[in-house]
Amino acid sequence: MVENSRWLHARRNIIRGKYLYLMLLLPIGYFALFKYGPMYGVLIAFKDFKVYDGIWGSNWVGFKYFSQFLSDPNFWVLVKNTILLGLYMLLFGFPAPIIFALLINEIRQKWYKKTVQTISYLPHFISMVVVSMIVTFVKEDGLINQLTGVFGAKPISFLLHAEWFRSIFVASEIWQTVGWSSIIYLAALSNVNPEEIEASVIDGANRLQQLRFVTLPAIAPTILIMFIMNVGSILDVSFEKVLLLQNSSIYETADVISTYVFRKGLEGFQYSYATAVGLFNSVVNLMFLVAANQLSRKFGSTSLW
Image 1 (tube, rainbow, N blue to C red):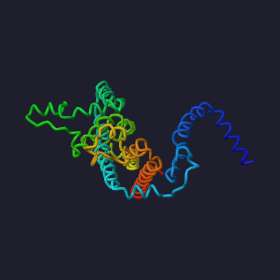
Image 2: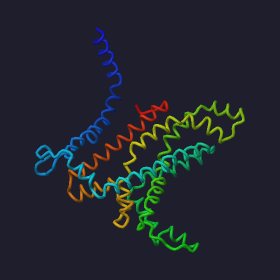
Image 3: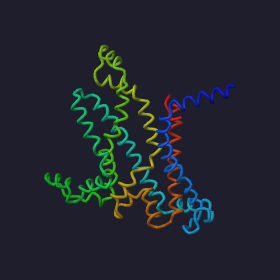
């Protein structure tokens, strides 16, 4: 009887919300087709994949390609470059939208606030190719060298110097993503209880004290969740931008795991090896995510699961 009543209750809910469930089919289909479906192809990381033999017809080789990558002379360079870019984005890119959202939240004129927000969102919708072309203005005859030349500085071909790549990459990423990434923090700030702010004003708190003792604690769970997710994707640097900006003269800082996979897989036709490297990258990301979540759950009250 209990099972029947549960089934009837679930059936009534499905019928009542049938249009919502129909709408849910689209994202489920998307994830099934483009996220879970391709996982079948991960098998070729453990096989000597031959196109004419297919995935199941190819011979198993176990962890051969993982060992090959770990013993590759470029392994530590790739890992170092990828982790450093991820850490720099975590150190400089992660706080940027939080600070920007806090500044936007302090604007009282609505028209000005909306204008600034709209302008800050625009770079997110610009094609990565166009953004990379804009970044190339840092070349020797580009805009930056023309401006610094006014003060007598010598022109520098920034994108031909390996030591400049990380700074250029991080700065362009922040410019492109800071506005769009601030949306979630602005949404969290809209839920801050105004009565608490008023109470702090009555107690004599200035703007900085209001920010420290009221605003930041209120959005701290959101910040922590976003931080965990950023740690979990620390090796997933922007592949398209790195590929478009890099050249052979700056590989020592600009070559990352994702571009290495591209060269080995699509240009070198080493599909099994490239898949193994990509899977290694994903597993390490997962380890970072689990570790960050465990630490957050241990020392705080917020976690992903």
